[in-house]
Image (cartoon, rainbow, N blue to C red; front, top):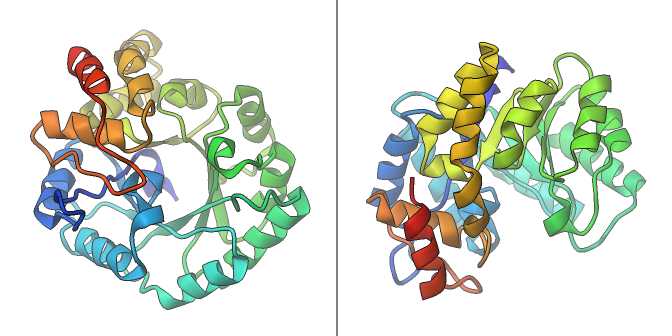
Length: 287
């Protein structure tokens, strides 16, 4: 899956003030991010997938596939904590033009590692396209351990993991023992270079919505072994990363995009517009 190496951008879903989807804004976002990313990720957490209807999700996916001027690979988020519903959604979704699905580890239920394994085994068996696991304990309240990841990596249709645990030791364990073709992908923008150094193949990024060229340079320098230059690019993201999540994702990154003239900052409840304090902080840190 070499076409999924490098930077995947976890696309926001631009919205009008009334909460409806802003497709003109989405088109501008595709053009903007297309300057530096290697593939699009549609309907991840950053896309506010939790508050979009099934028909809206499909409309966004169709728009990205049909307005993909650079013909970049598309990864589509399908996951949840009801295994049967996830399987039904995969079967019911037209995945023509989709390279892989990104599927989050079951949240809220707090399943055992065996439960997580069986969930993803069922997902992999049903999906007509390859599956990328998504481990984000801060949201799911359970961790997809290195041992379970490596067990899942042996399944034919599971090709990688977006690791957002923030646990570098866990990531290193996966990197050390994974099958050669299994992709270790950073789910944390600030750990991108660290994972490149340990055998990772890229990142699925929030900040790439705003700064795709920074991630392009980071990848190129890392792959060329130019560590000092890669560090310089990584450090550019250090100060602005934290405010992106202070009041919920994608509140911060949407405000950055509005300052850059890409799309409006509107989000759906239960998320709300950034506070004046957060706005001022972001404005001072804008790259």
